[in-house]
Image (tube, rainbow, N blue to C red; front, side, top):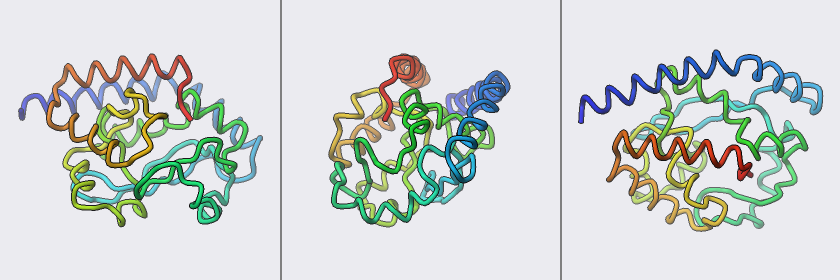
Length: 201
């Protein structure tokens, strides 16, 4: 297992570094589009929790209005996800450009830097927000037994149809129990397909 984890980490570093270099022109374009279509910063500081409950800060291209976090309280009653995680189809806080970026998961690209420095992996359970983690049950905390990832089993298993957070956690635990380099490759290939289809929200 130690050798497999070393290979996984090595692949994370190589792929993240190459992707950051390859997509650097796209990063510039997306940054300019965000900057000139919505007031506020280009990047959203994403305060999340990683392996073992360790908090860290990652980044996304900002896809919502600048005061989105403050507006969230007014939308809580519309939450479509049972559990501590917030999910709302057609969230009014999302900008027009943000909706387009989310559809193709372009807002997630800056997380490649988090993969490069070891806070995240290419594949693994999605990290929860610090505020969400504070409400986790002991069962739900089990998803943080491994390094979180940019993509996961939930994202390629009909994520838009999952409305119960415990079902999502169940998929994460299934990934952890059956993890292999082959499973990571399978999830990555399915993720590429989902991105091109534009299934994100």
